[in-house]
Image 1: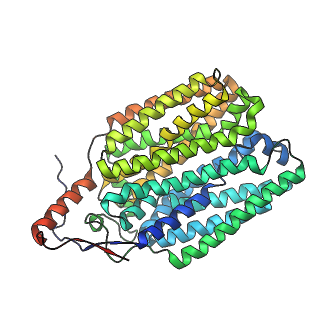
Image 2 (image 1 turned 90 degrees about the vertical axis):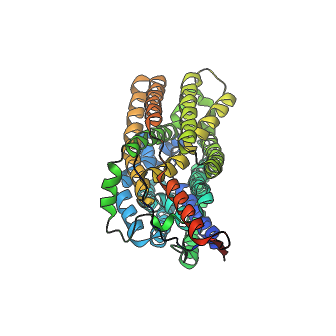
Image 3 (image 1 turned 180 degrees about the vertical axis):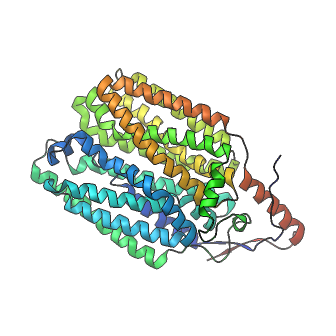
Length: 452
């Protein structure tokens, strides 16, 4: 068995209360950045008429996030590795503010290009934020809070999507006049842009890359350092068989989630044509139940450290709920669909936390942002291709064929999930360092301090 090498030097460890301020700012940044993602896709019936564009054009307001990520996720992760959390956070919040102000111009129907441009800029900013949760959690939080901190970050992103879905049907409707829809778009987009600008100011003043002392013994042992070894680290990670299996299972799960949410309006139009305006509420439910489950799984991971077992529960639940959704959507009332959709959202979304944390465990001592950046980079072309194929199957062969395609993908991902070896490298390092600290310092010298 491969042995984990741990430095004999035991670092001074401190936990700072400022970590909660840093986490709050980061969660708010992810939330505001994610609000626009599904706003127009859940309003596809309204947007196509208001802007005079096709369903495919509206779907690209969401898919542009995948396109920009294919180009920028790895450079953004390199930026995180070289310049730290503060620079990545500043770029992310600045890009979010600029993109949201562009969307204000896109409120008028002749400026649909501004909608696309705003989404493109916002999606570029996303890349500087999405790889950071494991790094932020490891740099600022002690070992028993890391998974909860990662979960809180993901809740911020899912919360933004949820807010966007909830506000979309309150912003514009097919039955409203042009003036009413214009007013709704303006109120929402100006409010978001102002909030993003205020958040940018708060980040400039309050956000720090790292505390003076690490929060856990394993943190200083992790690789990293100035970006000089970033691509060497990526190559090392790509040779890890367990990580490659996790990469496959994670990206299938996320791709199925993106495909379902992007074409949710088409599903409801197909099976519940008189209740299309509820698409936004279903999208909100998908995200809300995912947020609750993400929080729960984050706490469970911190308490149990059972990454493989909890990941397996997430995946099995995701597979089962997608199969139930595919088999029942044509035969159940809308009220029952809310239940099925809620369960599906809980399992599909909550997989992010164990996947991110397990990726760090499998690849330790590589820097936390590097395996996450690879997960996010591959996720985007996979999500894009899966959504386009699903859309084509949906249009050519019907909704049931499209749903069957997604269910088969989930089954493949579940098999890959089962094959991932159970090895927790970071956990092994933490235990070894704790043992070394106990041996060298003795019981009378506390290792952990708390400081404002």
